[in-house]
Length: 307
Image (tube, rainbow, N blue to C red; front, side, top):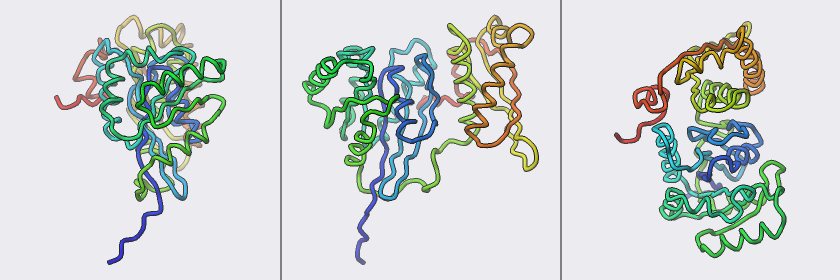
């Protein structure tokens, strides 16, 4: 029986880098849709987020990952496990650097886990230098030379995820290095996560935007109820989990003003994402030191590895 020639390319592209280098912004830009939450604060992404870019002749499955850092508590260790798992799944590895905060790449390459990930991955590696709209040409050329001297990347490309500079060129490079393969997902699918995952992420994004200091990092969002209704608005009940009793009144605010503002901003963003009206109910619960509690982390969906 004659083998049918595969005329499509498909594969996984894992995006890695330090916190706040623009991984989520880049994935959203390439997808043409806001799938990963983005804020100006580091460590916004906690789990890997899968986004699917489907065209007639190719399908790129992007894996947006948490920022690589030296973990200070159990949650951050679990976040790092997502990065390692995502690199194992990759067909192409995309390292994102921030020319503004890491102009020599030293902060990236001084991290043992970042080096380990790059050494471990044997497929094609592409380095993208982000935020070049904030740097002069000489600075960019210097970093390109430093990366070339490492002799580990098939391609090195300056980009700006925010303004869209060289994004089409980056996409073409990724397609070039994708393996020939049938598509993995239906053409109309944009992720493998359910709507309630993205609703929780949107609420978490609004917490990052509205509250200061440790509150965003100490907060988790759980969707307790999600009812789609044929008539009337969808009903969503969400719980904001914090670590200490003193954090609960901060989330709620005086006379409930802070949580009302949060609810309004989150509801509007959720409606924009779902393209339909919703009724959003928010409550706050305290789960002491949840970021260090294996049982709570497991119940919140953070995979505990093989232990």
